[in-house]
Image (cartoon, rainbow, N blue to C red; front, side):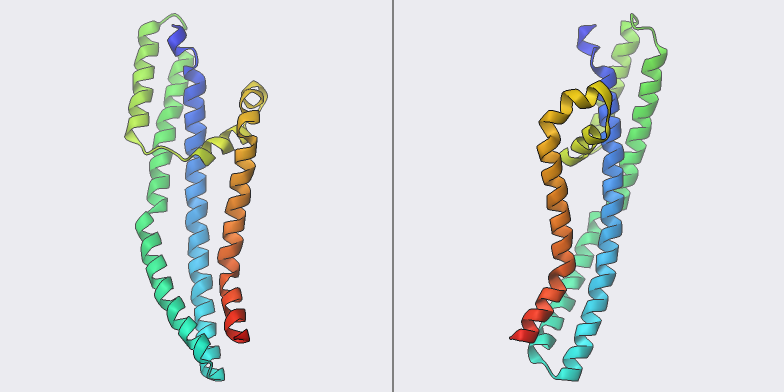
Length: 186
């Protein structure tokens, strides 16, 4: 019976991490769609400016940006973030059912607990795993004893991940401006 002692926490942690994974993927898809639109508009503006100013460097950069944008859009569309998000939703919904089932059985009913444990393992096997950041987000968003136990081990990783993701987004947004400045100055 001690073997299954942590089962409720395991199921809850996995479920919430999958919820966080779904949110992360939906946000990622939205960000990339916005970036695609942003880069498309910037490329059009750069094309017009290169024609008006007869700037060969800017014209060359525009061609490079157009080709890069095409490749990035094709790659990102192949990632299927929304499809993966839907898979996580299906998985965490099934995990929620397991949580309800576990709460409704008697603590001494070892057979039922084993059955839930096996279903839990099957659900883990049926879906790709979330990334570590989703778990860090779970701990960050939790409260009480669970957070008190886990937060000290993931706090630094969580904030490093948040900072890295923010820095990456800022760089992606500022890249065309920096490239324009470089082409304008050179």
